[in-house]
Amino acid sequence: MIEVKKVSKIFTHAQKEIYALNDVSFQLSSGDSLAICGGSGAGKSTLLNLIGGLDQPSSGQVIINGKDTGAFKEKEEAQFRNENLGFVFQFHHLLQDFSIEENIMMPLLIKGTSKKQAKESAQTILNQVSLEKMYDRFPRELSGGEQQRAAIARAIVHKPKLLLADEPTGNLDDENAHHVFELLCELNHDLRATLIMVTHSQTYAKKLNHIIELNAGVVANYH
Ligand SMILES: Nc1ncnc2c1ncn2[C@@H]1O[C@H](COP(=O)(O)OP(=O)(O)OP(=O)(O)O)[C@@H](O)[C@H]1O
Ligand SMILES: [Mg+2]
Image (tube, rainbow, N blue to C red; front, side):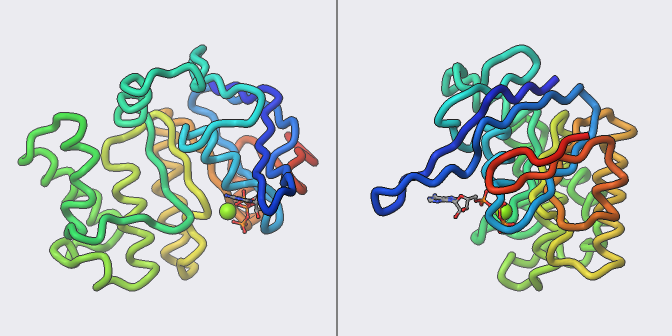
């Protein structure tokens, strides 16, 4: 279960305070799915980053399975992330000096999976995102959409319990977007992974159990 309790995030820029999030609260059960919607600058990525522990709230708490993520010790946090979290970033963040296959094997190797097993799993997932022929290329040798799919493959290869995706279908054509969305939903349905996805697509948002609409850092609607 995820509890977001009275979370605010204030950025300071040129001595001015920017409320990226203002008193946001909601709960989500394990295995549930949530779409985060709202215009550009509404606070969607900020909220996702806080849930994923990539950033800390200015006030309030993010509690995951009863644990306040703000109180995590460094080692505990790293372990939590490696074992439970899959993050698809808005800008894909592939490691440039590693091949696509190596990028995808990384979360498994960090978890202690054998190299042979990691390679096999990477192959399977590359097939699922139709990148099996690109395994030995470097990220810069792929198109934006292909990099996006590789990033998604990397985020789901270790079958995380919590899957956070920031506009995962943003750079993709309709067919690939549909395919990627189906993959994320499969993990959600079959493995009971909690799925939280930022999206501008009402079609996809409506297919998830809950929708949060953010407006200037405030929850305008939650159902
Ligand atoms: N490091 C930062 N310093 C100052 N302001 C920031 C910082 N990061 C984000 N912001 C501001 O916080 C607000 C929310 O940003 P956020 O990235 O969460 O928006 P978003 O909803 O994800 O938008 P988009 O759809 O364009 O990705 C914006 O006004 C943004 O300018
Ligand atoms: Mg964003």
